[in-house]
Length: 453
Image (cartoon, rainbow, N blue to C red):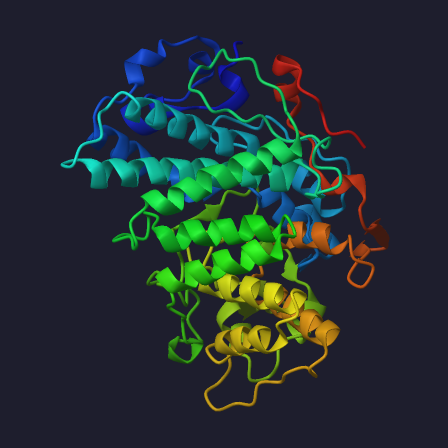
């Protein structure tokens, strides 16, 4: 089996509808047969359905937003999911060609982006085609950066400026050559590439997108804000969040939503920057239940409790309020306001922080209801914002990375505890298990460094 398996079941399935089979994976194909040659070809490639899927499902399963009875735990279909729930050494299984893991999902998209970027280099940008040319290039750079970030959040340590030059990153596949030698490089290299791609994308992309499956400047700035936040660069994260909000200031008023609807966002919300959802091995948010302490943290006038959750016969709640058909994973206005609020608080602009959080909550609470606010002390405001972040961004695939970053602060570090029947499992702060292991089949064929426990 050649290096094609490193990254993908690739363009054939999205561009030429070639069936994905084991034989296809094990035979080297002439990539020139499926390289696009026109701008329209490239545009179609970047609008394929697989760009609507993200990884991070494994980290969502492992986070502390869920709880399970013994029966619910045993009902999880895959043993891998059960391992994730109790933080056993996670080894991504090679389940089947139609059930990609986080590695495959990311690199399949990265490879298509590289094919498009290479194709663009062979087309002359002119006054007549520059709008389409720039949009295609910006879109490819955005999606590549998005998947590099997803990989870093799943398979790397948390970014620490003091150790990023030596901590392992992820393979930065920047060329379409499937036989290219790869290595993991450093975490610093990884984040530098993500930032480079996004900074160029925000220049090239249109101000707004006409379809929710396409990205504009607001979404690219939003992902840039998320990236800077996870680098603890609060000044740049705040600036990027402000730029994102400038291009997409729409906030969904939950007073206008049918609270009883099992699918409250059936009509796609204009809050989201692009249609994006997690690919998951099993519906742990349905099989299990939302953590009861999280449920109890919602104020009686907070409409998110009714919009996001559904009460089950056992008196516990499951999640129903995704912006997409699956669990939403992209950026949206709510996340942008929370990034802005947190960064302002950390930088000492407490009034600015409170203005941002009020703007969000005015659209989440019942009309005219009093919104509880903390005392004007930095630590109180920051704690309040972080809790609102957890309540607003539940099931977005971000909680695991938030736990990783907050574990670096003794004020917010947390030992996770999961009780399954009589068995109790714990995950201490900064435990090596916060970094997922790279699928072993990748290690076997490419001999890159594995994350070790």
